[in-house]
Each structure stands twice: as C-alpha cells, then as structure tokens.
Image (tube, rainbow, N blue to C red; front, side):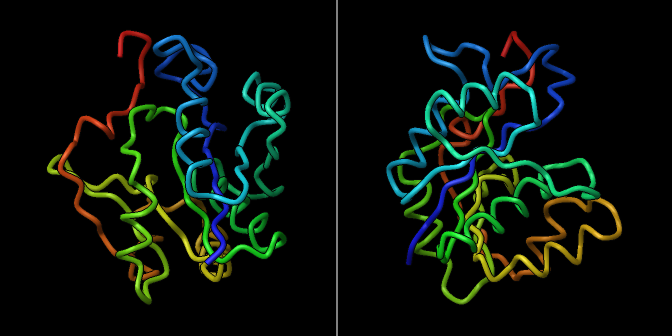
Length: 186
C-alpha cells in the first residue's frame, strides 16, 4: 500500500492569534514536527494551506506540495482532507495519513498502528482516554467520493465523515501526545 502524507495547516488559528503552523515549538516550527513524522511512513508529504500564508511559503521552501481547498468547498479540515485525497489519487497512492500542524508531539508509530487496524474500513483514527482524535487519521483514497458528497451540504463534524466510512478507532495510551496547541501559552 502506497501512503501519502498530509499535514493540515490551513486553519484560521483564531484562538492562537497568529499562524500557528509557523509558530515555534522546541526550536522548530510546529509544522515541522508532523511533516517529519509523516516522512517516516509516507512516500510523499503535502501540506494543506491557505494561499499566501506563511505555511504555504514554508512548505514551498521545504519542497513540499502545497494543496488548497477546492473552490466552493466549505471552510474546515475535511476540505483539506478532500484536497489531500484528490492529490493522493493523482499520485497513485492507496492511503493518506493525516496529521494536524498543531499536534507536534504525536507518537512515532501513529501511522503504523492506524494501518494495522484499517482492515476493510474506509479510514482509521486515533482515540485516547480523553476522546477521539479524528484528524490524526489514515484514509483510503477511495473515500474521496464519500467526502465530496458530505461537503456539498456544508462542513459536517469530522466524526460524521469517519462514521460514514465505518472508520476503525485505534486506542493510544499516551493522551498527552495528541495535545493540540491552540494558544501561544500551550
């Protein structure tokens, strides 16, 4: 199975106050952490960005493919996942591993564990004792039509899309590894 990696870095960062994908964390940008994680398991890595943002410029500097939401798609992470699935389909990948830019401490075996649990499900996603982590996920490229259909009526919760795909939930013990950095204080 060929896996493409997708970092979601096109959000509004409204609670953060500035573009969090390029904010510093332990001497690196937040976006660098999931990019490096995905490079461990993926043939290629792309970044979902907004045109003109610093994340787009940084991804270009790193030689990564920059993906934009399709015209008319609603704001939200599923539009970025849809763009990632379309990109992966064009590259001949079977799966897309997704990681948000604001989770720099994800476990190194995230993709391996999700892939192991995938079986015949349309996707797999992480769950911790604190609840689901639906954007830390692995999607079959064949889920593209389902996601496109769901986005025609607005942006549903990510969990709705995963439920439609009969996604496998994969338990991870270290909930702290999935912590989202939503404010500069985080």
